[in-house]
Image (tube, rainbow, N blue to C red):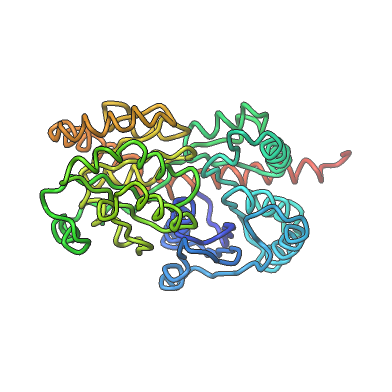
Length: 402
């Protein structure tokens, strides 16, 4: 790749989440390659935690808070965020502006496209912004994404499924898209410490208990209610069964009340917010990862579970089948089929050898395809193409006779 002076990443919120972890890992890897890297983000609020401390501890990533870059659609705030981002881009003069998530992607691409310094504009689709049962919202997002795609030199998809969904809605042209898998820092998942028993002891879980775990925000569409519906009877009937829910979110109080209503107090362990460094050990403490999410780009949790040697059961949605391949690296369940979800977990609970074999097969492919190094290398090639596309469009505008 040609030498780059400056890269600016823009993310809506720097909370604990797959999109944000992907972005921070990209920043760290690019700094290690010698690039000057900046990261802009909106205010960090709410119970989902923050990755800002990690970024600041790395020290070599310059950070910029954009006061009006907020997640909900808000015309006044969005207009102000556009002005703030455009001023930041013109001040920094980056070679590449790389946006992440839908809101930052739309506002950030507009700001970068109209900036005086004319950077190459790249966007990553981390997950679908389109939600079932919301035709008006989906139509608005489709229009906005089409407009933003016309102001972009390259689009990165974390899964082939994302490219397909966006092209099906007439967003961009096929030549814009490249799949670059969402990378993971692999080494902590391959280490033996802390051990399974050490982590279980910390959370009051006995060595012999069968633990079905999740790693997800306690938020809409993550499927925590589905797990309660699917496994309530099993949890009551089997003294040695437990749920381990890693994460926090806005639905915590409601989910805790439902756990009490179902008579499952003591059967569900909620860790609350944990540092990302604790995730490998918590995954090793599980016998099975359940990921009944209704909306995904490429679920990093499934990749992380396989790296930790844990078999996943997941809903067959969006990019999930690209890492959880049915009866090859885990089990896939039709999205929303709670009965099938419970049946799959019961069957795998009785088949420990199959769980281990699936996890072992998945671990090998995850280590090969989903490393942070492979992701950063893939982005280098995307940036090369984006810069060439930028140069071509600028020369076309300024060519004599045009």
